[in-house]
Amino acid sequence: MDVKKTKNKKYELVAPDGGWGYMICLGVILNMISITSFVHCFGIIYKELFIELKMDCTSITFFNGLTCFGIAVSGFFTSPLLKYMSFRKLGFLAALIFNIGLFGTVFTNSQLHFFIFQGLLQSIGHGIVINLSFTILNNYFVKRRLLAVSFTQTVAAAFGFLTPQMVKWAIERYGFRGCVMLITGISMHNLFAIILMQPVSWHMKKVEVFEDIENETYSLLVKNKKYATKKEDLTASNYSYNKSESATVEDNLKIVEETANANSSRLKKFVNHIIDVSLFRTFFLSNACIGAALALFTEMTFTLMVPQALYFSGWSENEVAWAVSLNAFGDLVARTLLIFMSSLLVKVGSHQIYIVGLVIAFGSRLGMLWSDNRRVITTFMTIMGISRCSIMVLTPVVVADSVEQKLFSSAMGLLFLIFGFFNLIVGPVIGAVRDLTDSYATAFYILTSFYAIVIMFWTIELFYKKSKHKRQSRADITSSKS
Image (cartoon, rainbow, N blue to C red; front, top):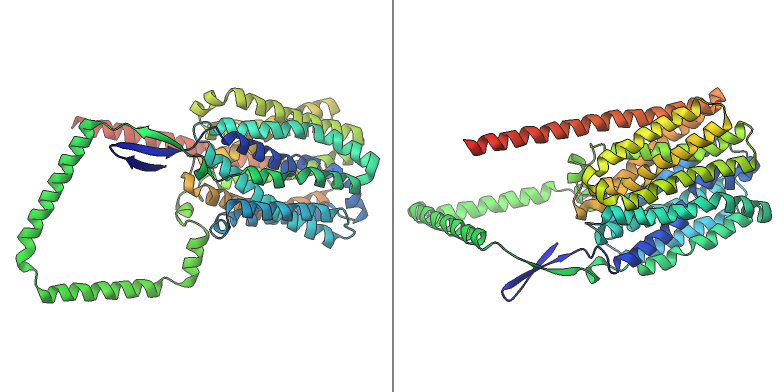
């Protein structure tokens, strides 16, 4: 927020919270449609290819881990890359890489080829585009941030509600390769989305700042008093100041400066250039970073494995597509409610709403695992869509509420990096457990327990912060009375 003076008036530049921000919303919607709408159809799209390439559950989860790690690394380096490239140049490059990776998958005939195009290239473009989309949305909207985030993702989810049936139709008509070609055509619209993403500095609103005259007079008196005190101190100590002491001070300052320059190594400068070190002291150890990354990993892994588990249980192609569609419907309903309830939910707090979503995720997955009835399982899958809404939609809002605006891109990159490590290390372990036990239920119970862990630690953190705030308020009241 910049403050400018014009004659006797002061103005500050604030986020537009509208205006060209609505075009930014359109661009983010196009990016979300091209990148996230087909994620929950992954098992349906590539089912035949997995059989053709002889990929078991361990290979699939390792591939998922590699993909998510690519997203994590590219998302992490988005902020440093913006220091060397403009926002839209980086966006164009990322969108181009993403589409090349998707188009190359059409011609895949080996696991290595599939891993390079789908797992590496596409994930690199994915991570950068998602980080840029959340960053520019965060820059354009401050007061209406939750509304903007929920609206953009709701429209994308509405399209995602149609994708399972569309994918099923495309595979039946053109085969999986023709289906991927069709998805590539849709995803190329993210190139147009990048054109819409103009820098926020072009559209900042100039708002007049009205100052309190009494407070300004008081601060001026305090400033003059400090200046007078400092002047008296300088006069009193002036007699002890001589040339020899002045030379000694200058020599000491030179020695200190040379020592500091020698100790600052190139590696340290490189690390500081990549990410703000202050994030490791504050944001890194919070649940908004590690907890959200673990929840995001669990949600993505669950989404990847559910269609395969349903096929394993004897469900038909049509039944699986219907179940995935209902899951997307639950997600869509929850996102729509977020739009209309955004003003109320802002008062509650993003962290509290996020925990409620995790509780729903935990309960719905247990309900699905404890039943053999297909209608009951489908019902719980619909409820799971509600929890996915809170995890996917609120993650950038939770991060934005936890760090300063200028650190948002770096904070999202750090969260993506931890998310990638979870996928690369824990993901293959979950797949190996599934192959060794020949049971999807065992793997799903482990994944569900991760939700319980995040809920427990995040609840403890919120209670601690609340009690700490009360203690500070009481201390302030006591000190003011004394």
